[in-house]
Each structure stands twice: as C-alpha cells, then as structure tokens.
Image (cartoon, rainbow, N blue to C red; front, side, top):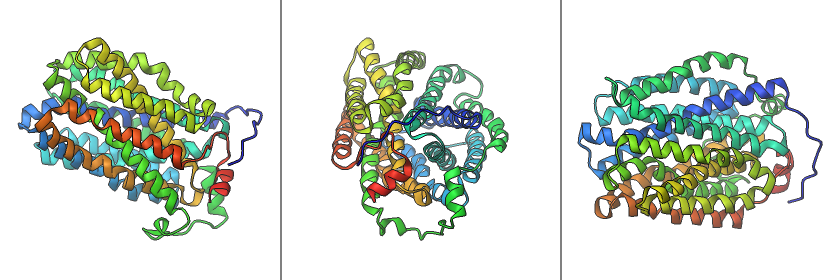
Length: 415
C-alpha cells in the first residue's frame, strides 16, 4: 500500500464538531451499560442464587443481542446511517428502562439481549459515521476519542453503582439512571445529517439490496473472515475481563462493592490520558505499530488483573487493562471502517463485528463459567490473554497500514 501524502490540515466545520459531540455522548452510554452488568453480577448472584455456570449462561444470553444487532447495522447501507442511529437510540432507551422491572434471570437476559441489539447497533453505526465524515489524517483520532468517551461511561458506572446499589431499587436503579439521558439525545438527533459519502453513493445509484450472504461470496470475503477472526479472538479476552472482574475480586479477593468501585475508578482515572491518547497513537505510529503497543498492554493487563493479589500491583494491571480495552476497540473500529467501500461498509462492519466477531464474545462466557467452577475465576479469565496474543499475530500477518489514506484510496488498493 502506498504511503499517504500529508495534506494541510483543514479545521473541522461547526457541523463536524456537533457530530463529534453527538457521537461521543451516544457512545458514552454504550460504555455505561456494558459495564453495568459486571457491576451487578454479585447482586444478581445473591438475589437469584446463580452458580458460576449459570452466570456464564446469563452473560452469553445477554451478549446474543450483540450478534442480532447485525440486522440493524446492515440496514445502514439501505436506510442510511442517520435513520439507523435514530432507531437504535430510542430502542435502547426503552429496553434499558424495561430491564429495571425484570423479575428473574430469564426476563433479565431477554430484556438485556434486546437492549444490546440496539446498543451495539448504535455503537457500530456511530463508528461508521466517524469513519466517513472526518478527515483521513485525523480519522484514527476521532474514532479513538469517541471510543474513549465510552470508557468514561464505564468509569462513571463504576463510580455511581456502589451508591445506586444502596437505594431502594438496588441494581434496578442503574438501568433507570442509564437510560434517562438518552431520551434527550433521541430528540437532539434531529440536527444530524446523513453521511456525505453515503449520500454520494446513493446519488450514483450504487446502493442495492444485498442478499444476506452476498459478502461471504464476493471479493470482500477474505478480508471479512480475517477481521471476523481477529475481532472474535480479541473479544474472548476483552469481554470476559470486563464482565467477570467484579465477580472475581468479590469472590476470590473478598473485596466489597465500595472497594471495587474505588479501585476501578482510580485505575480508570489514571488511565484516562492514555485512553484519550489512543486515537492520536493510531494516527501517529500507524495502525500496525499501534497494534503491538495496544495488544501487549491488553495481554499483561489481563494477566495481572486476574493473577495478582496485592491491591497496588493489581490496580496498576487494571490501568493497563482499561487503556487496552478502549484502544483495541479504537484500532479494530478504524480498520473495519477503512477496509471496505462505502456501499457495503455497514454490512461488512456488521458481519465482521456483530456476527463473526461476536462468536467468541457470546460463547466464551459459557466455557469460562464452567472453567471457573473447577479452577476459579482468576485462572479461567487469565487464560484468555492467549487469544489477545493470537489476534495481534493475525493483524501483523494480514492487515495493511491505512494511516492517513482516504477511504476511496484504501478500497482501490486493497480490492
């Protein structure tokens, strides 16, 4: 792939700044909700008397919604990015509020499965928007910053959950609080425009209704399978380190809810400069060299967080983990948004992330729940660091450098 020319930086337009803010606020709640489950698992365990394998099944059933989000995301190539983003924001708000009324694990899992259909649909569409609407030389920075704001949502969740658990509603209050601000966002989205690249492709008549399996048979199939495997290996590590961390430290390190919230909040605050610097890292070092930095942090952060016993070293490992959790998503979001042409970008993103990538995301909690019953949560989750290492090797073997290249240039040179 050719080296990019370094153009004169054009300032963001007022609309691009508004869009940047809107996408950041929307993804804030993706981080809040995705972290909520790990924060309330001990409470659900006590209330519904769940075993480790049952917790794994609960997480897997909830995560199934991330795969079903495929059907919403692929619709962005027909309905447009704006329409799909609007539907997902409203749908998530309703499903989150309904979760507060769940009366058992089955109802909870079903409602959260629906919520995640809309939540991940919103997150993925936001990343497609970001890939298409911002300059090539700062595309990584924008995607990385938006993803970093999702990490802020997780931090806020960690900070407020210990207080919310003490209210009369208990864990249910989290889903009330988490959904309310999105109601305002649902109204604010009326100022959003359709992606200019999508409008251009639509005007040129390139939009066609694609059969469900069309991308798996065409010229994009190889790249799709490569990215899907990389996403899946990555999720085996990232998804479970988040979901089961509190369960691990409460049961095996005997921490209280307040201790968990304090340590996670501290680690997250310390890591914030790194988290918000991840996007600049992608545009500065490039995608491939950044991958080495990010995945090394993920591997060592995962191993440390689930094997160390002292609070200070464990917190340091958690700092690495928080940074890597955000940075690795920024990296893979950038790659997935860049390596496919506009007329199939939504469908390709949905296949790589929501279908192929989420196989590891959905199935691994079941396997790890059974492992935890035998060896404990610490060794079970620490073993997932190996999958992160595999993902890094695959990136270096398969994916090109895309830093600073226009999307059209990438499409022309890689297909």
